[in-house]
Length: 116
Length: 113
Image: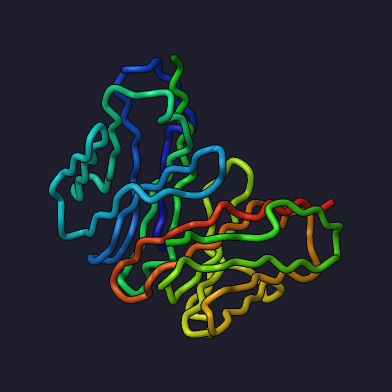
């Protein structure tokens, strides 16, 4: 069965610091998708990135970057020069097959607090 | 383009009662899925609907049921409420084929007393 672990339950940083959120996953499938979602206080989950298991290329989008390493089953998320607006709960999630794309297994989340 | 809307936003029920939560999918999306998020935890998959049929279910008992309507809106029904059903219930819509990116609503927060 699939599993996603986010060992950091809460992280607190000061604005402009870099911060990395860790995600480790378990799956028996060779084809799977990994996601990161952001949950602000308003409650809705906001999609950040999707990565398929065959694409280990790291990705950068503005201040956000993602490091996918199959060898360690990790999909870590780094925010560079953090801002107060980055404060939220961040979830890593796994989907084991394309047609199961709506059946996401989420980690427990990491609450990020960015202080001014 | 409208997003996913859910109603009600908050509600309080007592143990043993029944509840219906509603969701309007994002325009153009034909699949809806429901998740339960207990306080301080990650969302857990309940089930998904595609073309008005249940198309996948998580580890939830039969007292959790749903419907999808021809306009792709959806309902989640929970019978015989238990205290542990207290949670944020999130609805998400997507295109089943390919995209796999879910658009979530803001959720319905259910408190069972």
